[in-house]
Image (cartoon, rainbow, N blue to C red; front, side):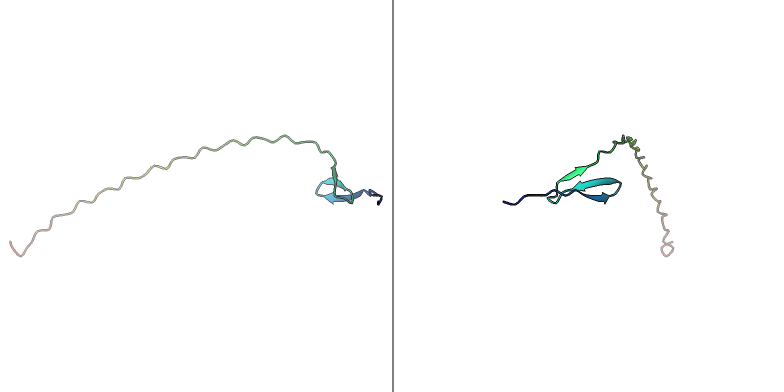
Length: 66
């Protein structure tokens, strides 16, 4: 049987250091958790529909019969 030698390799991953073994087991340095601010939801304004005015048709006088 083979003996397993664990060699810690530090990889820089963003702002946190990640320790990685040869087997891919990860040990992360614990970071302080930031509190998330709750975002206020904006209320959507309802658009008012404009009523279309109906155009009145002018009666045409037929001049040929007058």
